[in-house]
Length: 335
Image (cartoon, rainbow, N blue to C red):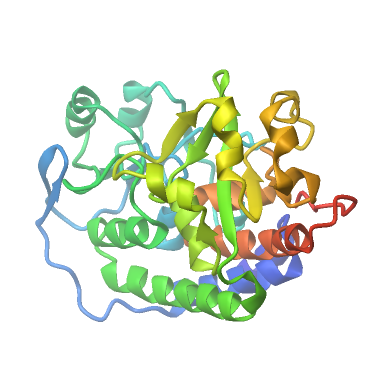
């Protein structure tokens, strides 16, 4: 079975599969114009890491970190469990290009399991690891964390891909793939001029309170690239390094944007039971988008990778269109 056939048989819409096929085509044809020099020195928040030679065996402790490794032509040795109904922690776009299951690592890092994979390098670009965890990982293999001026979850999709490509000796391939995806995002935004300037807020209910994703969050930045704009209240509370801010329920109406995205199931009792939500115009006018936790729209947007972005575009399109129509009776697709 060819790579494209695997993609077409994966759990995606035809449009997403076509886009992913284009990305995979770039994976197969993008040649590294000039080999990177090794040893490679990388500066990051914990100091300096030296990668002695071009890696062949790559592990990751990142949330969604396997995607870009696969896109760059490696089979990830490990994957960090996050969310989703997949035993190997790989979503459909990654299943399509993975040839073997990685070792699944939980939120609590299993250093022995990571060491057993015998990696040449460990990527920790979206991991939230502590200095102590970095030290233990570095004892296993050279480990790359976020740049010194970035928060643990601040890197945008193209920044993550570029840094992964640099660390793995495939910077030119990463750049080529970023160009492919950037062009797709630009074309998509231009095809939806009615979205431009519409305000949005991304929220969830977690640990007993409502939370708002800030303008520095990668998912918020992605939706912004499609032409929508963060609600002014979101921009007001956004600070570098803080991707998520808990808010009190009574302030919820202050975030009443043209579209409200909820990272929650559409029958989530905590969200539906919020008294302050009942006085907001977006819910009353049918302009909410519920991103169910086990559905492709949520997973693809949350992963924000070279492989997931085509699926995010395809799945979010009908959901945003339906919300902008403002029809409370409209059935907003969940995939």
